[in-house]
Length: 321
Image 1 (cartoon, helix red, strand yellow):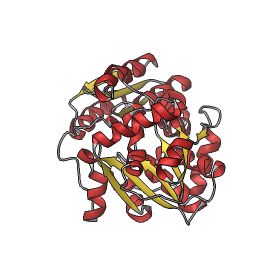
Image 2: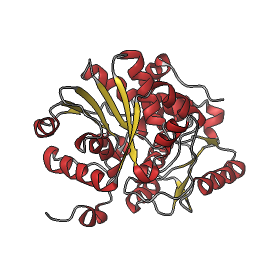
Image 3: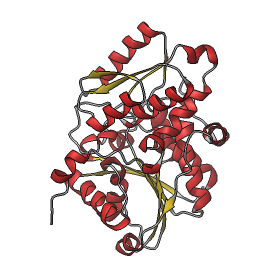
């Protein structure tokens, strides 16, 4: 079933997860506004539980399970943030979690998943390897698959971030969010289209993982044809049929951003806003700062998707000027 949630499902998700997640702040930066000649409203999911927006979808999916389903536990595959979010959600509900993670995942993310009590299973960093091992675990455990993005309840949960952002910063000209498998951008697009139909919805992704952009250009899904080489480790997957359906119908465009621009944008956030974000979070701002999307004179909502930064890599990513 490739059904997509509607606004009512996202509003139901907001009620379901309210006791379990943070309502994250919306911040602004005079410096960044001056750089862009725009008003930018940052939805700071780096302050979310488990450090990323993924807590929204994971909590919604886990708490939507009936008791019989939940008792068997949950299984997923993820490069990190969904892994940590699902592990936390399972811990809170008191059920088992089996998480397949690429062996290239940041150590900080692997450690976080284990810290929440989940069982971590490492694999090669390809979509085929992730899905293959997850299927084996589903057979051996009898658990329920909570896919990181191709899941009705996950998408509905992710859509609650934009729901809150629009409540706090209405009448946006643009809504910009990162694109990996498409769960966040799909939920964001559904919420935004329903609540603020005049707002253009733009996705941003890493240029070596531009499966979303190429899929829109082709008019069909471009599957992951290589292991992407990008600092944006949360944006390395291709869309599913479900998320592509939302993206192709609701998005204005998807912009692909080089790593150098992403790291420059991450540094701007660190220096100007004094908050920690991970590279995947910086991709949408990079699309603005580098001029790929001209927002001069516009009011922009931007989702900072997470803050699980591998500090051991910062010195090589952002050397002194």
